[in-house]
Image: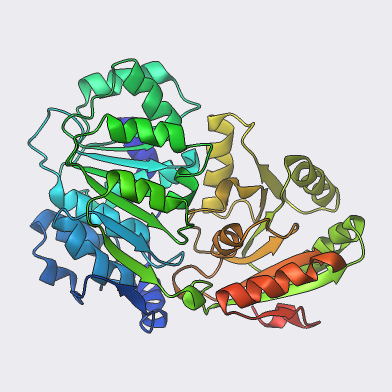
Length: 415
């Protein structure tokens, strides 16, 4: 437990001015829903003194639009379905509201369970809980794959965590073996809910719900909510508050989106090299649809003299965490990945995303480009497409009500 917290505390420390700029840019964001109360100041939420102190210490000054609308019903114990674009404070929304509901004197079992699709996101969310809750004496624990499960068992038995942030597989394993008791759970939170409720996770998520109290509060958050999410809403949510960003606002006004047509896949590599040589973005992410293509691209870029790293699911947890730590501290400038880090990962200095392969679905496109333009910084997304993929680009434009323009020759001046 102590080591997990120590590692987490060196992670995200938001700069207050940067955070405030992000909120100013987002003030015109229209969130539609069936709950009309809007809070404009954190002190108007009647939060615990220690929690309010942690919020300000974390760098927040005023609630973002999604926080202003979602925190109140979450604190009240209502089931909430909240949709907002990346980089607008979704994580802090559920962190603040769930910490307000935690009784730090109760040691009979976890009170908050946060379920996420990736280990990297679980570690990042732990850091936010630790930083915002630093004055509350709240105990937080990660339960994720790739680490010693016996250590998880010891920590569950001896540390009495109030908050658990987990991947579904590890939590279900510990639950089935009798090491994880959810009978005292007050809140269950699905972050990146659209990913958590697809075929690869749904069985585990159902198991966690069925092992929780029937009156547990359910909070679902994501930038996108496909139709299949309605199944979990009908099964496990009670008259939920729905707060939804209008679809045309989802792609973030601060992200410039471009495409360039290449004749074949080999030329894509040359295009990436030309882009990297032309611009001076502090950090970049390149997304590929397949692991083998990402590996090949990384090796070629290294031979060309670029200090690139490749993150994929086959690596050990220690290797994955090392790569993410180097990227967060800007030791690594260029990171290549599949969709492993397309969701939720918050690196504020990423100013460019390159889609080496155009995403296969609309939700993935939104999540990928949302890795740039964090908290009000300008960002750029460049899509390398084959000629036959141009209709998909136009379809994406129409769906999100956005503009994906042809890449200009002077694109590097627009960052």
